[in-house]
Image 1 (cartoon, helix red, strand yellow):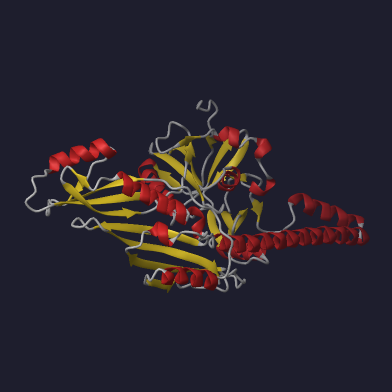
Image 2 (tube, rainbow, N blue to C red; image 1 turned 180 degrees about the vertical axis):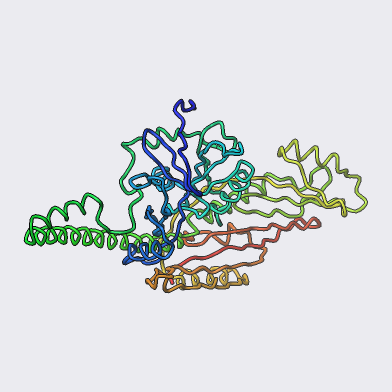
Length: 451
């Protein structure tokens, strides 16, 4: 990536407030951020916070929640400037971190700021603060963990100048913050509705014209402010409805059908049978005693018979030659070993939802017809009726039953002659009797159906 030729310039600071310049536009950092709980009248809550803390200007960010960043009263001319945090959180896609260099302080220590954007578009509380290079490294590591939350594999890119070693995705802030990309909602606005100096001069001139002129002015000014307030209320109402729908959709997404990503019963059994046919009953004198099949692997377990001349070295060489994998040994009991074969089975996708009772009756009857004992247990469902806002939440529409059985009947004979929709197998264990060559099967899986 080509490095920017025009770097942002830092103007004088007061306290922790800094002003950076991109494309001849001023961007403020160092705002104090608060979550706004009031959904119906957020500006009222914002003005209350500003008044209590003696703050002057505010930048507002709307995402899955409402957040307000406040600037204190200062000699710096901040009115009309943009919030760097709101701008980057609005313009950058997805969950990410942006790192911006601020230059060096009076003592020659390099300083930085960062913007952390959550997966739902919110601003992380660690954003908009000033950090030294020594603090920044650990702060980025911790922030990536915070943003991932329970999604450990979520990609959280770190944007910034390619010369900053924490950056994983180079980014030209001059290009991102072009004037055409900027929105007036990124600007800092005054917390009060007071008249400007120009308006006071207009009022004074109106007073000199006469009482009638003043009344006309106040009439039209009142209508204008009423229109602004009405527009703001409509905007807040629309935002509240959008937030409500987003919360409902998020709750629906949590009920994603788990069986769509699992292989069908037929695919699972065929894969396990192929592995059973592929693995010899004896490998260099070591007897195969069990195969454990899952949707991701086949684990093969072997033993060395007592008084056998079979060696570990020959077994390892044979397994590597046959399957290109290295066995695992129990060095406390060197007569046992195992190796695993990785596999990827195609998902079956979604099945139509029919009442779980019908599917369960069909499955139990199938096992009864073959005189096989079947153990079945229902997976408990914890319904959450309302969210923290008191809104009704959707309920899980399906029920899961886990089942298991142990039998001499091969799985392909049990699940034969019918389409076992709504059923997914999780494990098949094939145990071999090395004395007479007989096989015994342990089967486990889940059945899904409509509640």
